[in-house]
Each structure stands twice: as C-alpha cells, then as structure tokens.
Length: 503
Image (cartoon, rainbow, N blue to C red; front, side, top):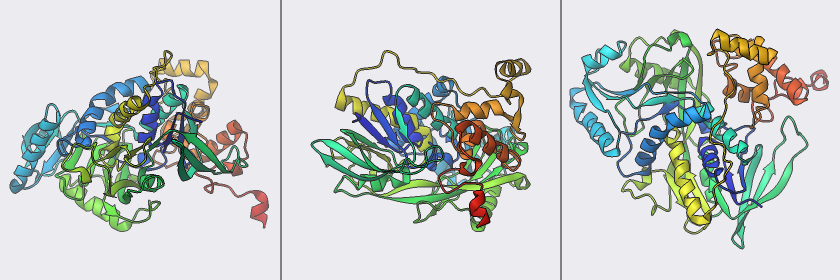
C-alpha cells in the first residue's frame, strides 16, 4: 500500500510528485499512457505567463504569479529550457485602451512587476515586425518561454530519483473507499518491453490526488456524489522552422476575449516560431486533429499582429486539448468571486483524503510548480510527514551536444564514443543522447519519448531522416524487435511483423 497515489503524469501530476518526494512518503503515479507528458502538457504554447490576465484573488492569479517567479530557479536546478524574453499584449483600437489599462491594473494588483504600457511606435521600436495598426501594447518583461516537455520530464525524473514509483500504461478504471483506504482498480496495458504484463489489479492508498487533465472529471466522479464536468477545448498551432525563430523576440498576444488570449506569436526555447492556438469546444477528449479551417484562422488572426509572418517556413501543425471546467462543486478553498472560472484544487468535501487538481487550463503550465506547492501544503497538513535528509534537489540533464562548445563536445566524445554519431541532422542530436534518454530515470521507450527528451525528430524534416535509426536504437537498447517499437502508445508500431505482412 502507498501513502499517496497521484493519478496523471502530466506537468501537474509530475510536479506534485516532485514536491512530495521531499518527504518520507511512499508515492506512486499512475499514468494511462506510455510516457509522462502525453496529454495536454505536450501540446501547448510553452509560455510562462507573467500573471496579469487572471482575475485578482483567484487561484489562477496567485499560482500563476508564484509559478512565474520560481520557474527560472527550477530550470537551473532541474535542467530544462527557460528564457525570460518578455511578452506584449497588443491593442489595435483607441477605444480598447481602457481594456488594456484594466490588464495593467490587474497585473499590478496580482503582483506582476515591471509592467508598462507602450505606444504603438514604442512597441515597434523593440519589435519591428509588429503591424502598423498597433496603437498600444502592454509590455511584461517578466513573461517567459519554457520547454513544456523538458519541465514535465525534469519534474518526473527528479521525483523518480527521490523514490516515487511511476506506473505507465496503467489506466484507472474504478475507485472505491473502504475503511478510509482508497482501492484503485487499474488496467495494465501492454507495452513494448513487457507485452505480457497486462490485466487488472488494485492499488491502495489513504490519499489520492487527481491530476488527470481532461479526464479529471471521470476520476473525480468515481468517488464523489457532487459531480463535475470537464469539456475539452481544442487549440491548433503552426510550428515554423528555426529560420523564422527571430521574427519576434517576445511572446506577442492580442487583447483577450471570452474565448481566450487570442492567436499568439512566440519564439520557443528550441529556436522555432510558434503561432496559435485556436479555441474550439469539442466533445471527444481524444480529438487532436488539425483542420484547414483552424490553420486558416491562425494565419488570418496572426497577420493582425504581424502581417509578414513567414508562413512558408511552417514545418508542422498540431493541436492540443485544454481541460475546461464547465461544471464544478467545492469552491470553499478558492477565495474568489470567479470560482466558476478558476482552477479546482483541494480536498473533496464528501471524499476525505481525495484531492482534486483539475480544471488546470491556461495558465496551468506557468502555475504548475505553484500548484504543486499548494497541494504539498494540503498533504503536509493532512499527514504531517517528515522531511527526507537525503532529498536530491537538483537533476543533471542529458548533455546537449548541439549547444555545447567544441571543447565540451570533445569531452562528450572522449567519455562516450556514441556522442560522435549524429542521428538527427536537423537538430544535431547524437546517439549518445538518445541512449541516455532510453536509460534515464523515466525510460524513453518510444520515438515520441525520445523526441521530447532529446529533440530528435523535431527539426525541418520532422523525423523523416532520423526515425529509422531511432527505431533501431530503441530496439537494440530495449532488447525488443523493431516491429515492437511504437511512436507512442501500443498500437502505434511503425513496422508490420513479417508473418502478418505475408498474410
């Protein structure tokens, strides 16, 4: 039996696991996918918001600003990409100046530092590609960009090194409470390395934390009579090549509407340019398709901010789902008049020992470390656990060959000859990095997992050249046939076994 079970290994669940791993607790994380960061956390804007958008007094506002302040220090401790590049919110109409002022005043009330309203000319002076129609801009120098994959993997790996057990390919199908203990029925899905380890079994713990993203309502409703509902909101994006990465130096927003923060244009920590997202309410929690209408909307609306966006440099498009909470229950912990639009975090009143961390849409990535801190305090108040004396606060990332200087590259190769073999030419990723990812604390066992940890396949050719080599390396290192190597979850194998092909 565990002391704490966390359901979901996205950025929220992984961050909570990392923060709780400081204590003498037996903790498990249950994740239905083949890797951490397979849901909302893998398909978002990669923005660390400054914190001026959320209503003052909400958890969104408090945790956004707190998360923004501690993110840079975490990036140094845990070794993930972070750049404090700043952001701008554009105003195109003199009549909307009042709305921009509201954002400014709200930002000050939320504790955001260094905010300033610029004229259109002042904005274009520091961002020359902005439209001549821009009248004013709210400049937030504390805004930043972050690697969402790197952040999630870093949190998970640091938690694993500190004793947290991550159980992947493990889907929660039912939860019952007996004598103050939650009995969680799990369905173990096959994986490439252990295809026969399948079937149902039960995990037990007195404390359960629900961080299941778009499926957070399903998990909550297994234990509570007060039902909640989460509706997925799909956002489509276009990713441009690194040749377009310097088109803007900051994250460029438009004045937000009821649907969200509009279409943004932003550099990424990997050197690309990212444009999007759309905001479409859908029903299917697995529907991450991209559409011609969505792409057209991105192009049209982005051009309002900067008419010369080099869309000819697009290398891929993708979409992600945000967990929009449309029906909620307990609000006593929120201290907010806007509780219906806030994060839902806290102990469920009719299911003591069960904690929600759901409805974490934007600015969820920015707030993730602060959400984990918040949950940490709640669990400590509940269990009063002792701190570990040997907690490992820092994480050593995989050495990055591309970003290293010549002397460092020479040392990499001297220590491991596999660093001399470049597998991904677009992103200069070596075999040494890929092998390190496969044998990391949260092993990368799929090509998507390799991509998120090393960048192999993220470049201009979108894995067209390097993926066959990645499949071979996975096969060799995991001791499985190439036919068993998957893109992500079981069923996404690249190759058909010879006998099946013949039939």
